Length: 71
Image 1: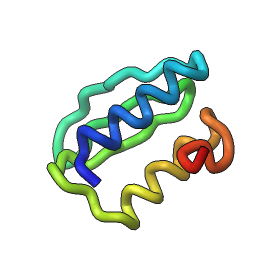
Image 2: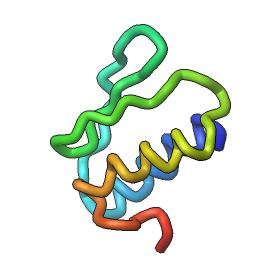
Image 3: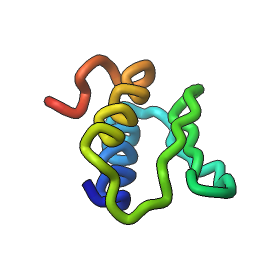
Image 4: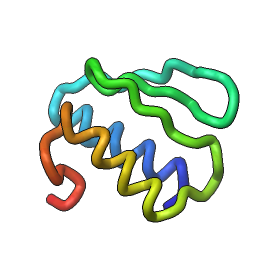
């Protein structure tokens, strides 16, 4: 999945559910985002592998609900 597409997907759902989504900037190979009270690191690669994408989506479940991306 493209990185921008993943970030947009999470941002849209966070907005829909009223959960804050903010970039922490960060340095190095990952950009960190705050999704509510959860810190979500996202690689700076243009293309993110399927397994990594799935892991990131699972990390968001605490704030957005179990399986939120499948709905």
